[in-house]
Image (cartoon, rainbow, N blue to C red; front, side, top):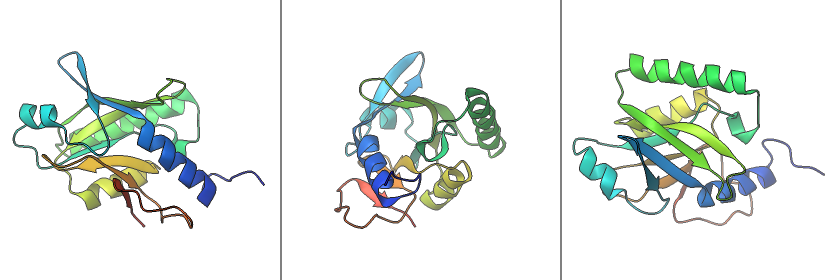
Length: 159
């Protein structure tokens, strides 16, 4: 039986894909790595007053591809929402290591985890990144942990 978009099997597969994905943020025309499980000292040094960081996208909810036009409209909506809330945010992206999949994203500053999760859910995201300065980057899966999926040291399951 094929996996449905929200099946336990698919969620577990996506979690594994998100863990090995490449994540980057941009500042001054230069792209910088974000690695799940490691802190981001360059980001911390560049933004010394930051209280938290979160990376999310408005593209392809639950990693189900949709038309580029709709993705771009939702991305603009997310940008407007962040700007209206007075949040600092920078361009970012996530991609598969072999570049077969790439998704524009935003690195958002100073949102507590609960508000960030709520924003991520509004845009249909299943996996996001969230962390505090001087702490390791965490993958946040906005789903209950599927049966049979072992505890991963850098993954938070948010029901």
